[in-house]
Length: 293
Image (tube, rainbow, N blue to C red; front, side, top):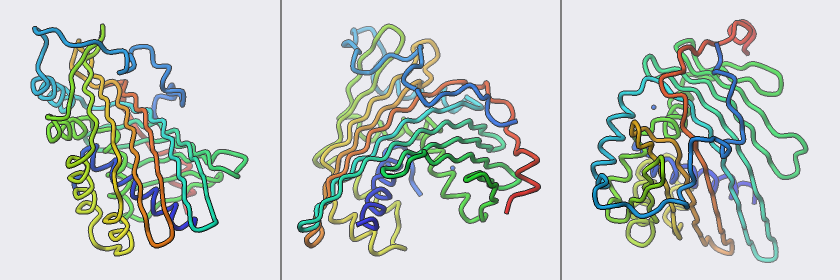
């Protein structure tokens, strides 16, 4: 059961990465908080009103926001994620919910990343906490009170995951591919893009995820092909003042049947983008350089 839950989580991550633009990239400022929905300059997409006729078009907004994102040199991202799994295997049932909170600082050139991750797992009394640096010195992770230097071949995978969350221009590119399903609205401070991916669009997203995952894991590929995306709802808030993204939410639901085992999986994420061009230095602590195993 745990194996299926783990593979299901990997599948949901790959689908989310695909929708966020992945097609096979001194520590932080110390001011970020896991309660990212309290950010004062962001307005929930649900409160957006209809656009007036003199506002930008969807395509114009995407183009302007991509340009603004490409011109940014650094940013911070706070992500709150909830994954729910319901697995039925004959008379055995498993219902599990995992909460993850992550804060990331990213400098684009030269690429450097600082990240704090906190994961709440059912049955575990204390959250699992991880601190991570990715710089030219390598990839360093602190967990369970110990620093580790990860093998170089893990760097590309980690950067793919992190950049899918932090490189907003990649996320916006996905809205180009589903522009027919995208609605544009606005509130006082932000434009809001929203879309629900289902039907043929969901099948296309699933096929992209299969291609992105590759064929190295045949068991994973077989699970992908049996999977059905019920829906994927996306919202994206973009500041009117400078066209920089400030918030993204996703709501993904998928189902799958394999022999006598059925799966229902839901994942929601809420991401806040801030500190554009305000992250200047990311430096691996000397303690990590000297003591990492």
